[in-house]
Length: 190
Image 1 (cartoon, helix red, strand yellow):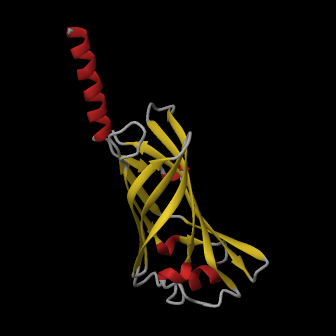
Image 2: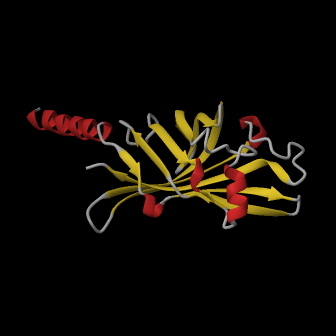
Image 3: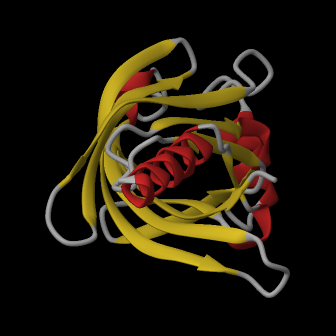
């Protein structure tokens, strides 16, 4: 009976420790990318270079995860300075007035195997709308320095016009739909 009690106590402490642990994006191993069709024949790829994400969860399967993510809009990079400056302007993101995009999770549900469905609210400019990401959990490892790391791939498609990113509203030159791909590695807080 005493061994059972000690086992339950140790298990409870492990879960409590996990619940109180903060996981934050590892910027050296994380990427926020997007692709949008251009002129109906090709895609323009880009990324945001500055961002921060974090989550906490009490359950080992992460289904109670509370996730928040912030992107610095002015860090947009498509490898063409003129285009990047236009994207930062009021025609697109209006980075001076709306310097960040944010995401706050509302649910994370396990689908099958290592796949999840992540739902939450995405705010771009002055618009907040629900969005759903398909998530693949890559696993958890301890790195060479003894730090716990967790990896994910998350993808979704949004209509930019829904968020008042309405330059070329016909979508003839710049498509309405934008594919978003997040390759994220999180580090457990010490």
